[in-house]
Length: 238
Image (tube, rainbow, N blue to C red; front, side, top):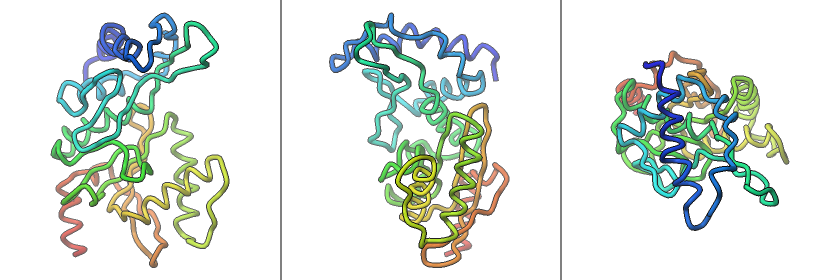
């Protein structure tokens, strides 16, 4: 991994992605509104894998949107601020950058075919999905958060909701977000859940059903993300 990744990312951001985002007809923002300090939230590691995804053709950009091969979702890497400020403030949005970078990790490190990867699950419950036989077969579900603390809180809440299907959906906050992830798992029953944060902070779990709707998480090594291991696991479970 090159230590020049962050510099390369910034060069492309200012030369390509920021102008493309701002000049899109449906936006018409000024590039002067971009807050450069927001780049400081991005790590060298995440910049590297994002660039790998772009260079490998795992995500293509047009009009400020990034799209993965098996996905209709349009990801953007800029967050727009208040409309009443001129120029409108723009900051770097780290979560989609990590998500897009994860495509390259799955492809290069864990041998997933390009055509089996997409961002945003069918019901938008998960940020990234690895598919099996078709677009309804969600084998690997990944949720991305911008901080390690958010990952840890998410997992602990999901464990509570996963174990008891009688719990009603919370009305707001982190609890509601975690509940929706559990509901997403109950809908598609992926084999593996991957929680991914900044700078390669991640937790990988097998999904073990204990009832019609209940399940629990079995923590695994990151190698469990391998498409070959997942295929073997699914064959054994069949």
